[in-house]
Image 1 (cartoon, rainbow, N blue to C red):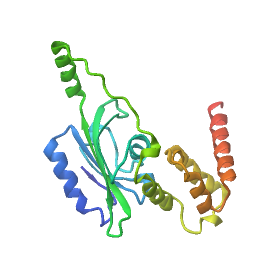
Image 2: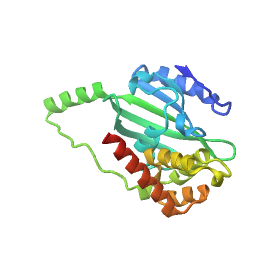
Image 3: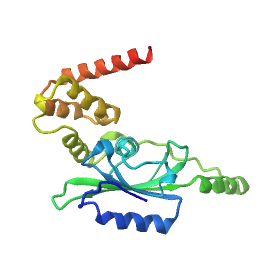
Image 4: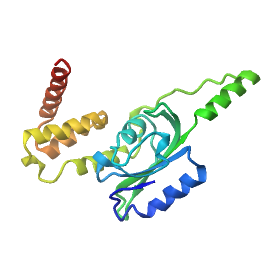
Length: 221
């Protein structure tokens, strides 16, 4: 359990996280995200040993594992699966949190480690002769609902007001962060970022190419 710079609007959800974690035990991780600070969105954790998540981690799990790869409907996604960085097989559910103005302010992710259950299932399948194929179908990102609101909120937090006056270096830093987190995988996002930064869509692509070249040059050193 860790408490780190939690805004008042999210503090009531701490009890919810603790209740879920204590109900399902130490194989159930509960993550509270503050989406007003995407670079360090993880502000509260219960049983972090499940995925080795840390306070201050960014929202990359939330973006890459949920928003951009699964069907998202009505602010919830129930019972999806992924493999954590530490190799654990995870069954997860996520709910986004909104304030009184219906703006998305955060999210709660419930992650249950299922490695042991998978081993038991394999044994049962072996002895009973059942070999059910796991459904590996992926949902098309075009089917996702509510993601546009989430990404708009993230962009508004990352890119400050009057950002057209930012230096080229700072604009490239912003683009680098958004690109690394997969935000540009969502259709139309580059246009929105270009508009808020006061640059053209072509310039965004140019910056991305420059950043890619810089990474390649660094790797070749």
